[in-house]
Length: 163
Length: 289
Image (tube, rainbow over all chains, first blue to last red; front, side):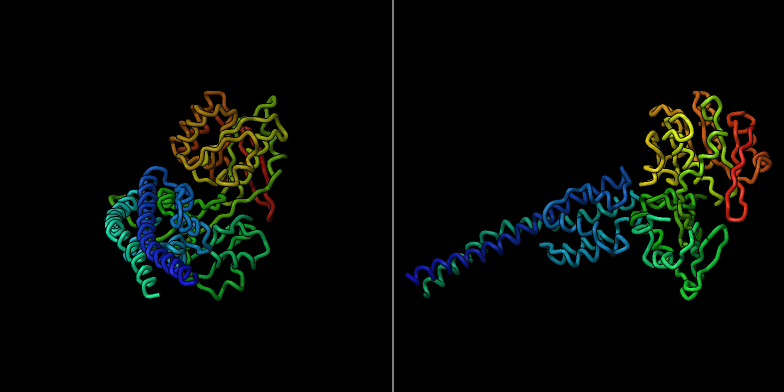
């Protein structure tokens, strides 16, 4: 009876591990997609309403970790927008790889520094790079999600056999 | 002086915390210690003398005034000033970056003058009865040298007219190009019947107010351009009373400047309020035109 219970727990644990690895891929894709949506909106608003960044960011209605990121930027105690962006990027937990973070970091160096049109142009360049990362993340998710899940289940079954 | 938290950088907030008197203006010059205008005189607090201001300090003031968003204040910077939230007006001076004869931006900011808006509720009450004729406000021009309290008086006149203090309540339209009269929370101090058109060129703002809000009184700070006069002429023709300010010590100063000569010749303004200084006290003299 105890062996059966152990096997069930081992199988469930290993499957969960595989699923968690797979979900991390999905989280990255979702996060990049949300950043793309927000930066697209910022790009349009920067040439239209010319609102200050804290107000623009408040109207983004970002969801999930990206929402946490923008909320932390608005509420940060840092005096300048650039300092806020960089500090928050280092502290808020975002499911991103270093190459994604680099693009977000560069975005912070552009925002609020120039006239609306120049910022918009610079953001479009960064958006192109973000789209490329998103495409790669999606491909990676499609390719590896099932692999991680299968590996988790297989590892669980292998453990059960050993028991 | 209030409401500068979150608008001024920490080093300025700390410096202001040391000064117990009412600071009218702060002067920041690169390589010099901070100085303040108190009762019309510029001086440096002994505690400020040890800290010489750097270019980055001045940049930080501007960055915070624009809430980290150059795109929102660029047009103002090109005019040589920035209005921070709460109506703090920051005059900018430095090395301009010019292209095809037009100022693009400042390459290097070397001096800033931060003027704090003052609220003196009731300062206009003694003046109001002298500006009325059969219960109606006569178009009035407020005159004084810079920094003597034109905007403070204008703001309180608007509040009194809008809330009916000392006169029948009126609907007041305010064309606030620089955001000094009714920016942010200042708008709530202008009375219940006041509509503020903010951040637009004055003449355009006045015409839009006339079309959209049917004001009974139209107010604008500092008439400086021929377009402003054209807009005032049009508003006066619609039966609207006008309130405006101008730089100058007395009527003679106005007569010396072609723009104001033309304005006075039109006969739009019927009253002139001349602000004077007696020691630290302001005086208000009403003259019929």
